[in-house]
Image (cartoon, rainbow, N blue to C red; front, side, top):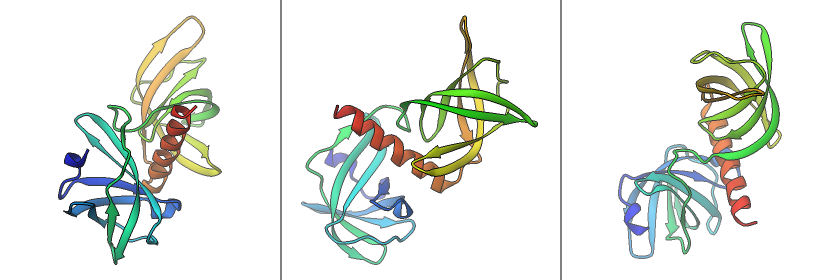
Length: 193
């Protein structure tokens, strides 16, 4: 895993506070620790636990570590004891059983979420959606409302309904990071069951 922590490697970093979620880049690596420069300086504390993840050729690398030292927008982090490769996808995908409403040109379509990631979702509907069309939606994730558009890129039909997979568009960085954090937590909870 240490061979994945190289100078200039980009990671996403999450702390207990969603407002601290940002990207960071490795600026130096030593025997026991490594330093990252935050894209957006947040409020971190020495000995605070943080989560980092990045895409690699083996899949999405995820680990928790502890902050060793802080110098402005540079965090010194201990090498983690444990790590895992979660999946090959860019974003973690989790199962979800939630009803939402998709809106296009003033028409509402009831949909049920099958799974979700920070990149998009899969839904079932009783009527067929249009490929590459833009559907507005609002999601309540951990008591925060995420508003964006959903663009179907693949549609399948079965005897009872339509299954549409697609990507999120017009989603803020804050909302995408909140979804990343939510999906990671759910994936870890599920793997610990």
